[in-house]
Image (cartoon, rainbow, N blue to C red; front, side, top):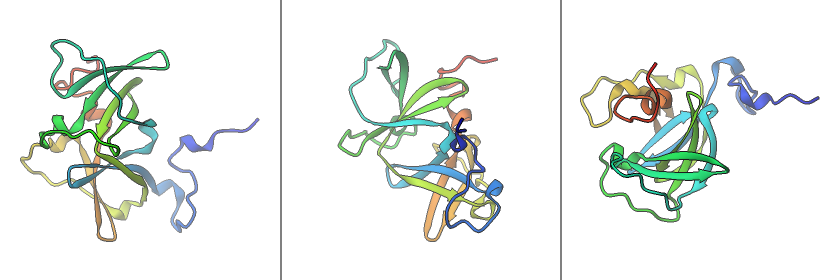
Length: 169
C-alpha cells in the first residue's frame, strides 16, 4: 500500500540543502502588478475562468457559484475584493480552488506563476500598514533573489466576517 507523501509540508524538495521540516511551499499568483503566495496544501486544483451563476444580493466580489463535480463552489474575485481596478478576464485568468476550513471556495486571480519553496530565513514579518489589504491576513513577505511574494493566510481571509463565506463558531 502506497502512502501519499505529498500532503505534508515536510516533503523532500530536490536541491534544498536545509532540513525539510523547515521549508514551506507556496502557490504564487498575480493580482495586478503584485505577486502573492498561499500555502500549497490549501490548493485543491487550478482551473481556467468560466462563467458563473450570479447570486442575488451577494457582495460584488463574490462573482457567483459554479458546480464542480456536484459541489456548489462560491467564486471570489480577489481583484474586486482588494479594489485593484476593473477586472479583465482573459486567457491568463484562473480560478484557484481551495479547501479552506473544510469548505471548497474558488478564488479568481490574474495568473498563477509557480510553486515556490521558502525557508524560514526567506520569510519576513508582514509590515503594519494601513492599506486596502488588511495586514491581519498577511503571514509575511517571502523573498527569493529579486522577487517578493506577499504571503496570505487564506484561512483567515476567506473566513473573515466581511467575506460571509464561512460559518462563525
